[in-house]
Length: 167
Image 1 (tube, helix red, strand yellow):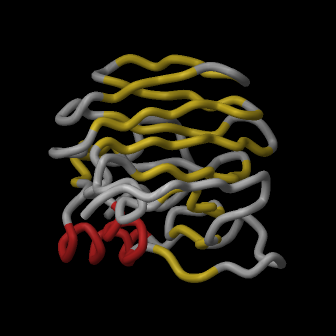
Image 2: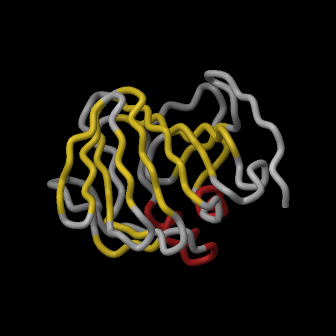
């Protein structure tokens, strides 16, 4: 697999509704980058969270384009606001929680081997889909079992009033 040139402007890219809430806009697929990375923008609403999880084979970088999130990395919480970044190296437990009304986060996974997990835990989203919606942790769990790319190691490490069983 070899990389190809990629040019995508604001709003361009395949849109997916992710199981855990949010709309993913794929900016660069693993196939397009020769497997080097997967890059997507994630539009989320307040309260969207992830279970505590690890990526065994990928490093995950979260760059906050707009809004605020709390990132829990290796046992500590960190507030990340617009233009802030957090990096969770492979194998390090992490999770995040959206604390602003909305947040746009650019997510980079290196290498791009987790893409099948994200696709398996998503469905196509037209332009009318909103980033909020019911969480479907069962779908995430099934995708993780089938494709790998992510392994839940605990519930979200935040005070929540939602089902925290995780994938």
